[in-house]
Image (tube, rainbow, N blue to C red):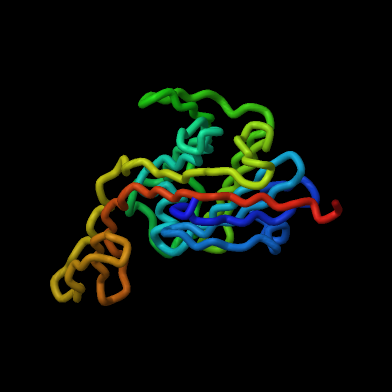
Length: 229
């Protein structure tokens, strides 16, 4: 498992409301990934995952700016095959660049579904009982929370499980360039730290963002033990 990022879960003493509140997650270690900060909790019957946008890249992803799908895959008992997952199609409420960047953040429309893998193909179905996905806001950051029954997961020796977070290619190529006017200063385009070309006006105006590359995060989730036992 050395090639997987370790995500240690903390114990959840009661079922979670998944309402974006920080309080239940206080004991969970935060793992920083490109675009997202991750935390995990588990109780005796459920696994909870919390994904929080990290900066502009993460807000674009979870805000649906580029129309990407985010899928949390759970691997099967062989530790290699993506058995099933929860797919969240993220679609922004507005066309890219349509809103004033200073306007309040909005949550994207989404209808999550369970996806199952069969070789190169996959099929989708409605969320079954016990699987929940919610989206909320904390300031400018978007928060996606997920609940999955442990009975539906391939837990190794009662201690750990494997999961992959994967995003699709963007359904939108790029946000429109800000309108340039004579006399307006502009920085030259340059490659950002995360592989996205960007251009920012020196007067602090909006920047044009090219669509991010697909994201893949491979996790080893270490389950917490009931401290009362």
